Length: 126
Image (cartoon, rainbow, N blue to C red):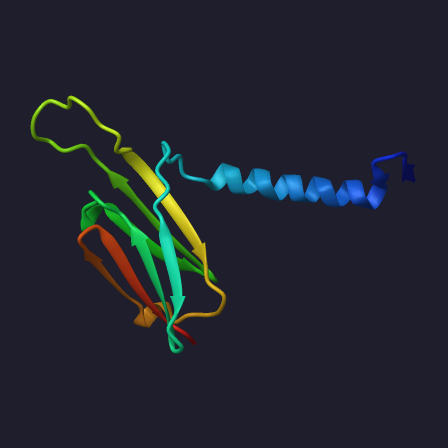
């Protein structure tokens, strides 16, 4: 079946599959209230180093998971308990950041450090 100026039926089927994939990803997404931590990924040869900026987030409020080639960093940034808030530009609430790695890693030998608001992950390659 030929579709006029919009392409063929297989083109439409492919577009609908892409739309369904996007909708599925959006359904699984954690609401972030505008928080998207900045990240940097480096190839060290024998491992990847992933840096994720998480200022104001306590270690116990972070979760890290490796799922296939994806590294997921999720957490929650709460407000400071001291004093009445007068002004703030800092986003608070839940967040999630997913970074796709270019190769396989060994999550059993991965390490994580939280230093001055910077999460440092070392992910050894397989």
